[in-house]
Length: 220
Image 1 (cartoon, rainbow, N blue to C red):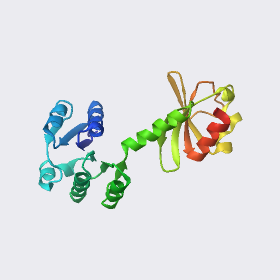
Image 2 (cartoon, rainbow, N blue to C red):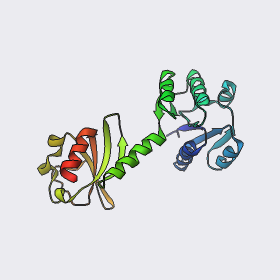
Image 3 (spheres, rainbow, N blue to C red):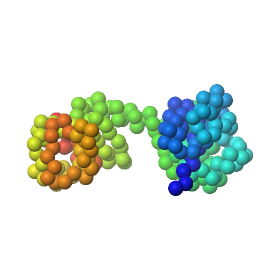
């Protein structure tokens, strides 16, 4: 199978982290930044690392950017450069563009010019940490939409020794337990007969309001 080709524009903390992780996963990655020191830092990590001003259409054309499967625009400190780069990528016909937004205004503009995916790494991480701080039972939190999430919840004594059938969580709370982590093992799509043990990590998917209700009444 052909390896996916990625280009990461902006090698700050967010872009650098993506570049490093994609490279570690064996993907082909082109790393681009206007700062030569940053580019040098990633020269040994990415497949290719180049110094370039991506607000210049000719620079992006010369890099053959339209041939990449996915371009990540991670320019954090210059909203104008981020917007202009995204616009040029769109005009050049790049298949998939993910852009880091620094605020809601930035996101609105990116949506209007056709960014395929917009991420708010600082805000999203802040939400995950806040959820973890509020509850002793919540280990991890991933927002799927404005109202739906996947949450990892530690099973309390109240659930210990009860099967999923007995608890009838889906009917009572409208949520689904998609997996149970028990020590080093993971039970994916557990059967209704599966007995929950105290300390199991329940991977729950559903509406935020239903998850909160489940946590308050059953876990807390």
